[in-house]
Image (cartoon, rainbow, N blue to C red; front, side):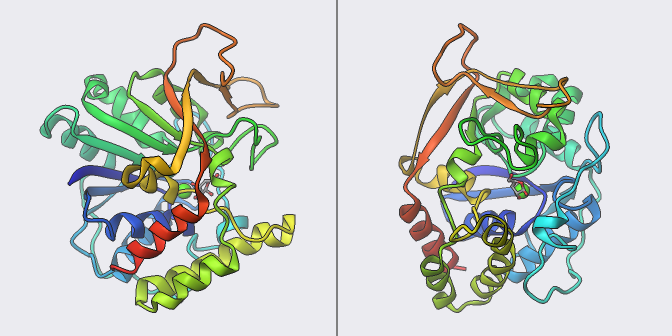
Amino acid sequence: PRKIIIDTDPGQDDAAAIMLALGSPELEILGITTVAGNVPLSRTSTNARIILEFCSRPDVRVFAGADRPIARPLVTAEHVHGKTGLDGPDLHEPKMQLETQHAVDFIVETLKREPAGTVTLCTLGPLTNIALALEKAPEIAGRVRELVMMGGGFFEGGNITPAAEFNVYVDPEAAAAVFRSGIPIIMMPLDVTHKVLTLKSRVEKLRAIGNRPALALVQMLEFFERFDIEKYGSDGGPLHDPTVIAYLLKPELFGGRDCNVEVETVSPLTVGMTVVDWWQVTDRKHNARVMKDVDADGFFALLTERVGRL
Ligand code: BDR
Ligand code: CA
């Protein structure tokens, strides 16, 4: 199986991504690393373990990472995810322990230990841990197979400011460092994730699975989607983070192209904006494969089938 590290700030949609990975034998999760984002670090670290316990997988190790962005105060998103970050189902305190090693050290050590080009980084939150790992051990950049990230937006604009998507906005310096690193990057922006909506018919298929992870996930999604339904009158919430895992399983569900991507870190108006040279109007070097299109029904069929295996 393909070896992955999931770096995450759960988050209901992060939970969906973790479940999709756990239900997929093609993937081997070497560890889950947590970061401050949707909610503070102590909560994201708790939530990652709650999700693993919902799925009866306490054997997957969880490493806590950065509790704040590199150069800014933390911005969180309780307005979307609720006070716990996983609002929806009844939550319990996790029994499994957090690892004592820091997430950044785990990432560095794992990339140095495993053969070069075999470990994929899946990032579902702000890129702080990855940027800190690159700062600590720049040589790891050449050892990463691929970094698949949920973050950014271009034609679609932003979701936390008119210009910026949340994960990049929270730690733009970290995102900028990752785009500069030379790691092969696959970017899943809002342009993709706003096309995979939790429509009623799709959620009912998940509910029909009837296992514990599926029911917990449905309760999470019903909480999470209310934000978009109430605020924008949309037919469901965007299921951002599982697109990262789905790409590893079925890349043919997605369409995009190689581009240059730069991150704005200075302008107060547009900080955190991902400037994607989609039309190749500059000769700046390609540094990411940027996705724009997705087969949404194919994506939900995959998610439903895999959660059904848990
Ligand atoms: C991203 O921000 C978070 O709220 C979600 O979990 C997702 O990773 C979407 O902008
Ligand atoms: Ca997330």
